[in-house]
Image 1 (spheres, rainbow, N blue to C red):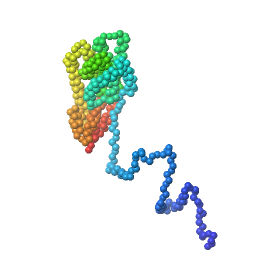
Image 2: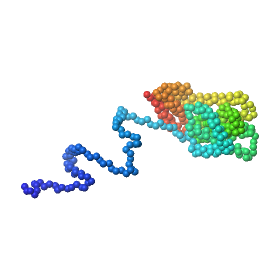
Image 3: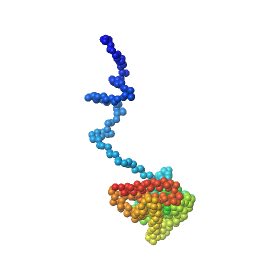
Image 4: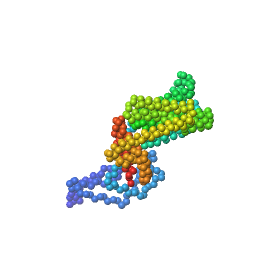
Length: 449
């Protein structure tokens, strides 16, 4: 043995590559075939705190969501796992909108005409009288709208179509009527007021109001299921026309005769005969609705609407003539009130026929297992609907809104099947699938505990 070395020479020391901090060399690992688990390195008893890195103020983020947030000391446990898969309830589908809406561009045109019409009223009648007339005209419009809502309660028409019908009558029909009146005045000069009220006004007004109903048939044909829908659209167009016309009548009465004359005009037009224009145009809508029920083309609906238009013009002329050439109050009691009662009874008869058809179509779904016979009675008859709503009110949380949706979707389902049977709805299968899913979800929600 010598002092200059050892019997077994050692490996020369190789320093590790330079690092920001010292890192010991990794231990030699045996080949994979002889790999043995290595013990974890001992943890130091004390670790110096980490110094936070500097972040510029422009990029700093708050620790908490807001200045009022507080750190949570207690962390609640996670929700227990479901014992079986619990799929989420999918969003309920909606029926296809195509053929059940109106282009937004038509509303833009009506908006432009509304500005022009409002300017005309302010120029001709003054702003104060126009505003007073507008407020009073809302009363008969609300009465008619409430009546129409009762007719169409369980199968409401699309809101955009309802709004378009009122807007067409209130803006387009009135504006076109005023243009024709101005044109006739330029061509033929001043005309007899009484003859104009009995002849010109019924013809011109009913033509432009009926045009609005026909446009709805062309643009939203899938909302025309039959004569009841035609009556609804015709009444809404007529109500819109009467609204704007009443603004003019009320304002003129205020200007010419003050509050006394305005009161008389309001009682005669706003309270005694709010449904007059609605009834006139409803005849045109009834005829177009009959054609729609039979799957008529645009030409067939136009021909049927022309027949209904003749009845609307005659009824309108008779109504105006009774106020011009005869004792209005006598004819109002002896003819106009019975005529209105007959109109209401006719709607009741049509609603009964519609309920019979709804029950027949839903019975076909009941035979396939979608409904029970008791549910068909509840969904298709007025008495059954009342019983269903009372029962839903007794459930936990008052489930009448769910029941109302159940009834409306089932009624719409029956109408969809009727259109499919008639072969006049290319989207019937999609609507049927969507409505069946909605009614099934509604029944599950009603029966849930």
